[in-house]
Length: 342
Ligand SMILES: [Mn+2]
Image 1 (tube, rainbow, N blue to C red):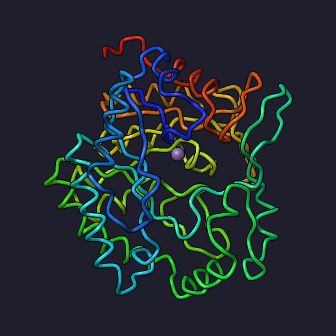
Image 2 (cartoon, rainbow, N blue to C red):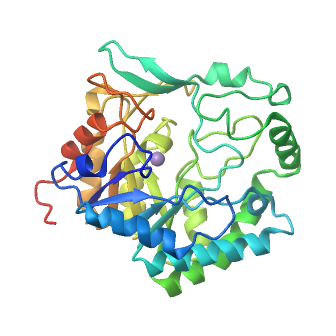
């Protein structure tokens, strides 16, 4: 397996040169952030990003994420042009050496949290999700969530939510199928593996459908186009926020099928109602058995990419919640097998 680290570009408070100092670090996971969703990423921008990463002594083989335009998820007539742009993005990524593209199919909201800096008893700060607080939010009255406030203007959000009223789970599956049948052959031809990130958290929110939540959903997804290019990002923390999901067994099953191309590793402390916070990495700190998860990756001979997904803010670090240097670096150190040769 190859250990990677997410980096948000030059505006990221974490420096590439510091990421390189993490023992065994192989590469950087990043994206082009200044092109509107649905448009084509110029290959020159990807080349410049690759060159910057390689100049720091790291590799750029995983993109996270190429965003999927809402019109594709809604199945609107504009989707054909937008899917063609997505296909072009796959080709452009391949042209600069990208091997894996992470993406997701969550309507409107990507990850959702209610607290960006919950203080833990040890004085560290972490991301948290309060199921009861989210259940009380009436989307008609506007949704204000930390990390998402600036994503949509209130009127835009209202209109988007109205458009999703006619999209139930099966409609979203149909739109995903339409999308996959177009992009997977393109990815195959380009030598790129697509890796769908599961829904975070793995349950419907604000009445919006969520369709990638558990074993059955992952099996259905990988079956839509039966190709190694149609794979998944196994995110332990996202799937793990539903205590019914057995992460080591998912790693064994989908890793054994050769469909996990990218793994996000992190722990969560989960309550039965779905309330959770992102805990420290050790198995004893949260609900997930990280040691068992890593064992499962080894058992299936995982050769893809892993990254520490999120970390707490520790040692006084400030910056992008979940994406500080120190705690993620601790994760990368804990999870890298001693036998890894780079
Ligand atoms: Mn993740």
